[in-house]
Length: 186
Image (tube, rainbow, N blue to C red; front, side, top):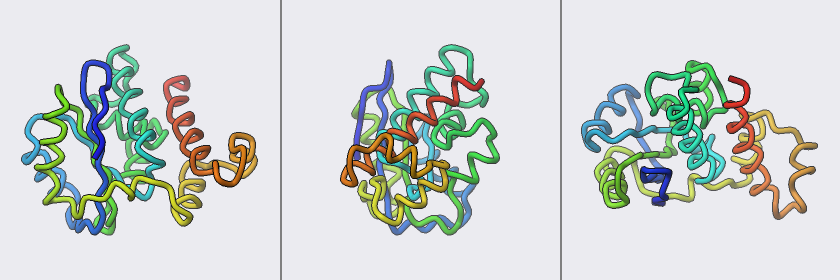
């Protein structure tokens, strides 16, 4: 679990493994009930390029709302759009949303205090599986999947990464950059 200050809010980020999603709308409703009135989003952690990816998705979504540049009517959906680097909601759900088969989940929660973020994540945990933030990190199998999902070419990766050891960090940077460019294309 990670809690970061985000403008006037606090952002809680947590990863989970061994999730049993079942019916996605039912799960979302149950999480909403558990965490109260806080804004949250659930994502397929297999399509998350590190906690930074989620941090900047939330930051860009929050700023889009503040500046009146948002596409979605709700901040949680705007976060989904930025996390997916898409401006079409249906495409965003396809790329980074949950499915009944998803077993690794990322949870983002926006609250007014760090304590509320921790508590919201704690309350949602029984519904989401085993807490494990390592599902947010990039490993070998996930690396290739992210390259495909976010259309990152080998040439782009080589231009940003100084060495093989830096490729995961470079991929995160490229995904964050792509998502930030969503605002420019609006």
